[in-house]
Length: 168
Image (cartoon, rainbow, N blue to C red; front, side, top):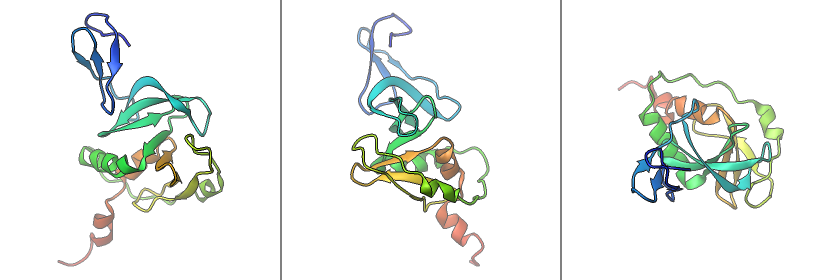
């Protein structure tokens, strides 16, 4: 990527959401797309488990992820997953969306971990949103299909939904 101000080369900063101009030292933050993802565009060494094209570096909420520009799926490190959800919930501007049941047929899908090649474990996400996620415990990675992160972030907080009607 080239600097919008001077045309010099820019480099993606490690674990950051911006590019740094190597000449002027200025920073550039790409705009978030309609999914709320800042596509940083730098190719990753891993391929999408759903469509097999190269994943690209991106960020969502307050964390770096790998993103598929074709199917819009996301590969999220498990140690960043909850921080991303909490960040998205802290900025949510819409009302909490009632949970809908998961599509149980997603449990039958078998995708391979882009890092180790083993089958990922499909299971219901326990934090709300009615989503089936794919996880590789060996590599500590979660795969979310398009729209699943938004469903999780828009779901009622577990504590709120379980105790909303409890008498004080």
